[in-house]
Amino acid sequence: MGGFLVIDHVSKSFGSLRAVDDVCLEVGPGEAFSLLGPSGCGKTTLLRMIAGFERPDSGRILVAGQDISHLPPEQRPVNTVFQNYALFPHLSVWENIAFGLRMSGRPRDEIRGGVDRMLELVRLSEHAKKRPAQLSGGQKQRVAIARALVNRPQVLLLDEPLAALDLKLRQHMLMELNTLHEQVGTTFIYVTHDQGEAMSLSDRIAVMNAGKVEQVDGPEALYETPRSSFVATFIGDANFFTGTAVEHQHEGYVRVMVDGLGSPLVLSNGAVGSNQTLKLMVRPEKISLTLNRPPSGERVNAFPGTVEDIAYFGSHTRYRVRIGEHRVIAQLQRSRFSGGGIEPPRGADVWMSFHPDEARVVRLEDAA
Amino acid sequence: MRRSWFPALLTAVVIAFLFAPLVVLVTNSFNASRFGGEWEGFTWNWYEKLWAADEVWESVWVTLKIALSASLASMALGTLAAYALHRFRSWLQSVHSVLITLPLVMPDILMGMSLLALFILSGIETGLLTIWIAHVTFCLSFVTMVVLGRLQDFDFTLIDAARDLGATRKQAVIKVLLPLLLPGVLAGGLLAFTLSIDDYVITFFVSGPGTTTLPLRVASMMKTSRSLPVINALSTLLIASTFLLAALSFRLQRRA
Image 1: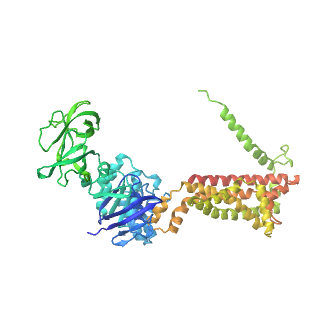
Image 2 (image 1 turned 90 degrees about the horizontal axis):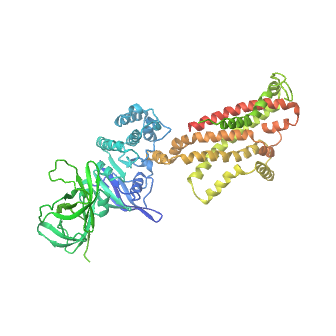
Image 3 (image 1 turned 180 degrees about the vertical axis):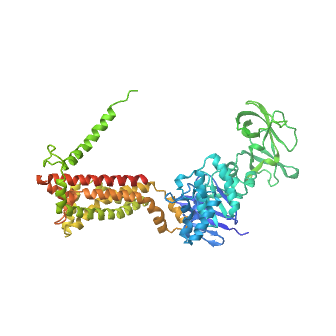
């Protein structure tokens, strides 16, 4: 499948800063795709280049096979939902939505039909005559989306669409956006720094860092098999261990000597050479804590430690456990019915354990 | 807590200080006494005299012509200047910024003299045109400052949004920037209008024969005590129209 939106070796510098550094991406038609990264990672610059507000220094941007890199914003088949919505304060909701159709000189009937249909889609028909200042944050955003979608763009860009909303509304709009995407079927490109938002909104996510794309994958793959420690920490929480592969076992299991952990750790990854230095990652919720040593076996990693700190979050509890020279974060679901479940107090001696499948290699280095 | 009488007293004193002269003036315009020393009964006499004073109405006409054309020109130029000052940063704009603010702080007498010197040097005969040029020169500064204030509040993402929705650069300016700046431009224009009507010092230098503006006319009338009550009547009309304009300008600013 050829990409519908293709970012082809695009770079952009501001002075000496390489904001976007040789980025290549392919987004399929109708896909919901996120550009995720911390502020300053280049995601907004990339978005502005797709919209046409910035010109790339090198590389091309294609939509449906057409090179749009050098078109001005008004000629691109792309519309944007701005972070602060950027609604025209001197126009009514209806006129805001009609703006794009009027600019392209559509006949009066078509404009009326299009705007009314959009108002219905975002359920704002009864607010058509209001000014933006009279709307709530969520309503403003729906106007911004309608104003963009009414032009039937081939790609819809959404810049931090939920950042300006409060928590409750954000969760609600998350659902709305997903429904809307299903209804209109346009390619949606989200830009966000919020991993939760990106995970629940998109089919695929490009994680960006310092102008480069670190990894492009579906939400689950990004979470379960991050390819770099940056991705592992940016998406969710992670415990890291650095060690050296010492011994290959049957069925692809590898024993790894981890610095400062005492005993070796077992990992189920066949693609590791002997004497290779590696960085491992274990998610906090994959770790179990027990008062007694779990039944020993080759395929359980178990280490004794001491609970240093406990934080209660309602649906789950987080423990910081000191194991050798490491401090490990474990996250336990609070379930009244789990027979073996424990709630160890601070200072308790516990066993931390996890299955070899749950340890992921995030970085390989050749042995010196 | 006992309420202090001091703020109320202060307010009363300030109001008295500001408005007592106006009250005296307005009262005297209806006073039958020529010198206004004491009340000698109500009269419309001075207003009738004013109505008959053709040279006064001629001056009013000259003043209005200049004020209207000067404020329109300074609205256009001032808006352009403010846009340039806001959007571009260069040494040229720094110089521009100083030049624009200069008339605000420069003594009127200096400006009047230098303008006159310039007109004489370049052989332009003083008259309507020179007054108009002089008025545009100082009105421009005020309009620019007011519009610049509006521009600083303007969210330029709106221009991005307009272009994203298919507007060309020109359309974005016409459909989005100008409508949102308009209240500021109008407020600046009203300010320019009142300043132009009011100006004496600069106009004194650059006016020529047959172009006596209202302030110049009033000043020359002051020389003969005979027409003093007529000036009172004229001033009363001026006060009334000034209040109207101020109220209008206030409404515009509020809507902005």
